[in-house]
Length: 426
Length: 109
Image (cartoon, rainbow over all chains, first blue to last red; front, side, top):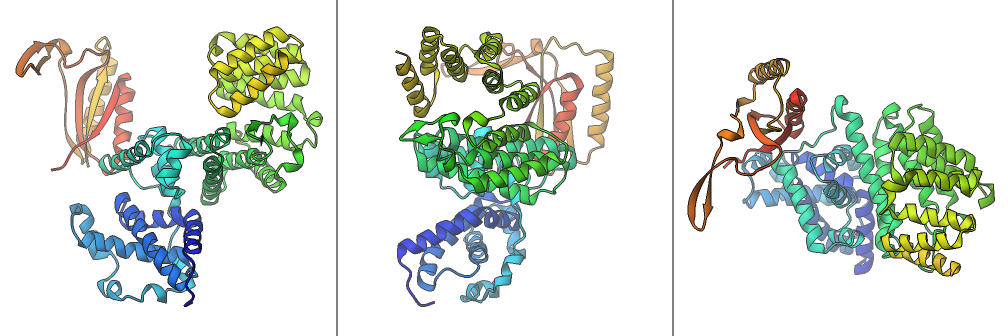
């Protein structure tokens, strides 16, 4: 106390608190102000501005989340008192913090550590609201990152390669729809539980994949997405009852951790490094252990779903101490199950590659050829075909397939990889 | 919050006696709901007349506002506590004959 913190330290402290606590504080505020997103967000913004100067002067409080919550509640009441608010929200004034406490300037400083317990964790409601199917998937993703993750609009725009005003508008539209169509701030009833939870998992998975696959273009922005997806999934798993219905949530967390364990090893000098060439000593063993434990927990529920199957595949890769030890037959079988479940073209292509590794390039190529028509414009299909043709020694056909893949691929990382392969053949 | 349930279906959709029974059953259920605010079926689009502005003039033409495969066939207006409850009604309507439901909140001035 009494020691003036340098501005940068105060900022770093606030950012750390934001990452850890933004979702929980905001969810609590929205619950307190009966579903008013705008008011809660504006008030939290105000509280953060206030925190910047207050924490610089007095140091970071022992319970920053409680500090932010109390301060934001006051700022919200300030905003409501200043008027210009909807009739529905003014009603809350009577139930909100009593005026004497509001006028007491030192109230915040008097809060003790136990205040944390007074903030119920409302994040599950917020997750379900942000991932409501009445919002577009793009909006669900943006809103989840903004409100639960506390990522700035700028950061989200950067990660998704859209102009900041476009992202700001997307967020504003989503908030307006929540307000105008009255999307509820609740955990869905049992009859909709599975469908709605599936929607939430899709959003988290999309966030992770956007971070994981786009990483070559703007690494820090994309790393933030991977971290955020894992943080969100972790919170979700902690908030869900540990029963059959949550097996897929655990499966997804396992999948994200197992894939993320290879995040740094899969890119070197701006180039994508394929699994078989990765330096396995750079894999994050703690993440692999946690992911594997979670996967076994999920599988014991005997409610297998697509995330658990993908996590099982990822775990088999993680288990192999060198590429040659990979249990490709088992992986091919898991892709077979996954293909039957999802019918997704990505899975079909991956399955063919696994079959090629287990039973020879010709067997894999045979599976790919069965898919041909549907895949004309699908880059991973051509990349996989090129790879298998190269392994089978058909250089010319392989070069053609690589060239086709180059014209279809989406990211700089993929393009660099394909071009290097193409050059090897020429 | 009042919601308008706009029922869009193909004009070729045959309303069999069985389907009509379902409409009547739904209507009875809707009228028994505390939030019921009315609902009607519309005559086919062949009976529609459109008024639109063209070169500053109000022009009256035969036919619906837009030629589409799915046309507005009727509506309900119900007061529901939130979108999730409104969507329960929309799903019931959709289940009758596969019509597409557009759910729009009503503006309060």
